[in-house]
Each structure stands twice: as structure tokens, then as C-alpha cells.
Image 1: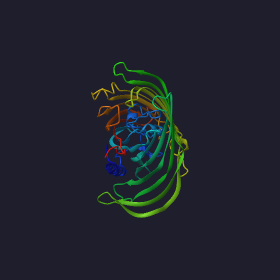
Image 2 (image 1 turned 120 degrees about the horizontal axis):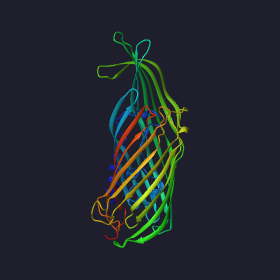
Image 3 (image 1 turned 180 degrees about the vertical axis):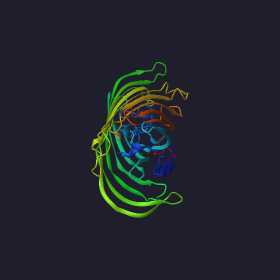
Image 4 (image 1 turned 90 degrees about the horizontal axis):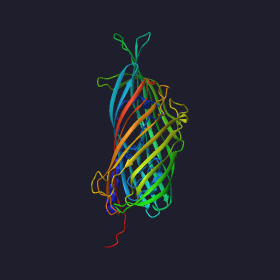
Length: 455
């Protein structure tokens, strides 16, 4: 058992890591991130991503599912949950024919979960997670009556969440029906910096370049409630291990209400040239406006689904499970300073399964969890007006580095992995994107803050 002093020290170190994640920027060029809030980060746990990115009815004592805060009632140990992703993207343009590839490191989440009362099944979670990113640089060269015109569109930024949530469960593992509810709230904040650079290309005459730049900072509160209902369908005792196994059907739903982000914007139009190092040297300011107030409307999003599982309550592990979700967002309600964008209502169907051969085994692979799934639907970004279909397949493994115990007298270290490979766009789109994502999650847990029985 760790002392409270050591626990506070580790919490401080993790908090430092949490805030250092803010400084990490994905190095990529995604023209899709020009629209709406940008490219949306996946919000599921790494285990959920391996099962087709399911989340509505997913709950675990060894992972933190922030998409449905009703799951927090199952947190039995103080748990650190950290996730990162590395993705490979290949953009293909039909006209003009071109290909662009990039590899990116993306922080997924840094979370801490703790039972407020293990007996009353109340858990709390707080942490940080990025929700969207903006990073693009697109060049367009056209011929005018004057000369060749080069236009460069650039953008950086993103959206993040500082999150706190609480959840409670009513009912024990042997109850016919368990009900859990929970909610997340916190502060959502971000920045969007976009610019349009115009340059006339001429061999004999020198034209000053023009830059039209807008920097917008925004932030506001959000609210995300969730509910889960679990039905005990039957119980049996394994003839070999003599351990109890349960058949469960779990239903879940959650959503984030529509909310406003208060925004502040600076706009500048100027002429400039580059110095010898490629830095911008302003020549003349054409227009300057600072502190332009406005609002960004972030629409309602929701998901619902089910999980059917054979569950071992003594370990808190599914021997097997199948799950399906439906998620959607009303992005037609999105507004940026009162203006709509090239976004549409989105939807996605997720399905997945997992198998743990023998949770009581001494063998690492026998007690590991194997997962697979897929998801398909439409993206909320509608860059060319034809809609973007998204389809992906997923695989993953969960490795428990210590053997499961029948009592929580030892910490556990759980490593979850997920691989996603898929495509955004079809033959009707001029630009399509193939992607391969590898995600890694590390979950560390122990029983802390317990009074000494003996001195």
C-alpha cells in the first residue's frame, strides 16, 4: 500500500505531465481541419477503440470511460489512465493528382479516477484530454490577367477539455438490475489561428505579399450526463475453476448538451516580405481589429448502445463480450461568430467484441484480452459538399502484467493497445484520406488512503 505522501507526490508529477501535454502539437497537414472545430480526437478509452470505438455500455474497474460517466460507479481503485496515439495518414487528390503522407504523435488523455466510497459505489474522475486539432497548409496557384497568383491557406490550433466527473451505481454484482448515473463537467478551451497569404509570382517585378490573419481564443463550460442499466441474465459456476460467472446485458446512453464558447478575436491585414531566414517582416498594416467578442455554438452530441457479456465478478473481467453503439452529432447547429461552416449532421455505428481466455491463468496471454471491431458512418466535415463516409476496422490487446487476484491487495498494471485502419471519403470526393492509427494506454492502480489497523 502506498503512503498518502507518496500518493500526493505521484499526483503532482502526473499533474505536471498533464499540463505538459498542452504544449504538444501534432505535426501534420490535414486540410479537413480547416472546417468547424477541426479534426476531432477520438474520445473513447484505448480498450474501447480496439472494439470499434464503443463506449455507451463499456465499463471497467481497470479503465476510465469518460464518454459515459455512469461508468465511474465501478471504479474500485485509485487509477491513473494515460493514453497516446501515433497515426499515419495519406491524403490523395484526384484533381490535380497528388499524394501527401504524414505521421503524427497525439496525446489522447491523462486521467485520474478514485472511489469516493467503494461501499456506496461512488467514483470521481478528473483530468485533461484534447478534443480537436487544427493544422493545415494548402497552396493554390492560379493564372490571372496580371500574373500567376499564389494563395497559401494556413491554420493551427485546437480544442481541449479540463474535466471533472462523478458517477454512482445502485446494486451489487449479484443484483438482478444495476443502475448507474453520472455526469462530467469542466472547462473547454482552445485557439484557432488562420491566415491567407497572397503572392503575385513575377520574374521581373517585385510585389509585396499580403497576409490576412485571424486569431481566435475561446472557452466555456460543458455538461455531459450518462446512464447505464445492467441486467443479470443468469449465473453459473465454472466446472473447472469453481468460480462464478455471470451473463449480463448492459444498456448505456450519454451525451453532451449544446453549449456556447465565449470567444475573443484579433484580425490583421498587412503587406509583408520575408527576411533571409524566412520570417515575416511587416511593411504596412491595412486593417487591424482587436478584442472582437463573439460566441461559438458547439452542438449536441449523443451515443447509445448495449453490451452482452459473460462476466467474472471476482476479477471484474469479461470472459467475452459483444457490443454495439450508435453515435451522432447535430453539427448543422454549429456557428462560429454567427456563421455556419461546411459541416453536416454526423452519425456513426460502432461494433466490437472481446475475449479473455482464462483470467485466472498464470500465463500472460491466457489472461490477456483480445479485441476486434469496426465502425462506419459519415464525418461531420463536408469540405466538398458531397459528404465524407468513414469506415475503419480495429484490433487490440489488453495485457495485465500481474496475475488477477481475488482481493485487491496488490496494484495492477494494465497495458491496452488498439490498431485502427480505415478511410475517410469515397470516389465521389476529390480528396480522400487513408489512415492507420496505433494507440497505447497505460492504467496503474492501487488501494490508497487506507487507515493502518496496526502500529
